[in-house]
Length: 346
Image (cartoon, rainbow, N blue to C red; front, side, top):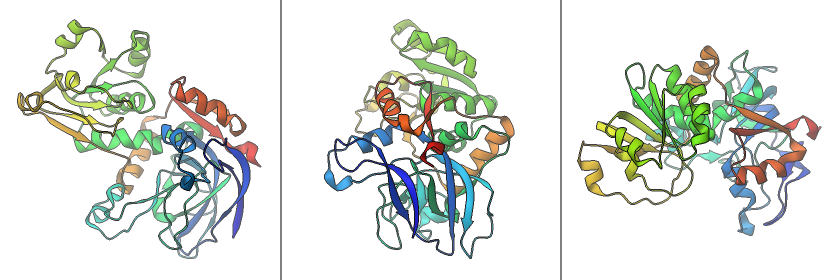
């Protein structure tokens, strides 16, 4: 077995502490990645704050970058020294209709998650990338573009792909009018990507102070959603609205901004919602959702970002300050993504 140092929480209420963990010996299709940076997602915060003892020990981290340090005997597309990136899925059945369609994120047997998942070979619980090394099947290791800040690439593997999939599904490009609700980890990347695709972008925010930030990211219009007159003026004006707000909220005001045959895609909050049918009926509007992404779209996203110089806006912290990152993330005190530098785990 391979060993590495990781940040692990041993039980509910315990903080993340550096410990030695075991990684599996390389299978023929495996790649060992020396992790340099890993993004900090709300999912990581939720994992550490879980109350179920059965969910521990946990090593969070599911959006990371690094370099290949070893490969299995059957690996053909990657070599030692290659810069790579890995997201929140590390395996899937590979044979269901969704996997065959390149949508491994919707695997009928449920994809194996980077942490808290079940290894499909030995049944062990996966441990994440708040660690110095990770072992992943070659199929879920992506080539990282040259010339981009590695730390700022890491969030593309979660926040980035989450917004990229609907942008591509609805063929966003020149002439398409896109709305983005919320300007956080997902929202700021949605703006950057939609603008780079050629769309016009409107940002909806509850914080007037974010207007300048939204415009700096490329938004042409900013609407403060508490301003009834401004919301009324935006009615029926957008072809696709990406709602990235992670808390429960009323979707109806944003459905009102969707134009004829347009779509509201709810990405941030995945709990139950209540919708008046009339809000969909008038204008033949659609309500949809998305989560993570399949392998083809993930590599496509990284290549697109490499061609257009797009990365996340990040605040990089040494891994020893992970508690600070999680506490501030809980207060939404970040613009727009924390990333841990794992170099101090050596």
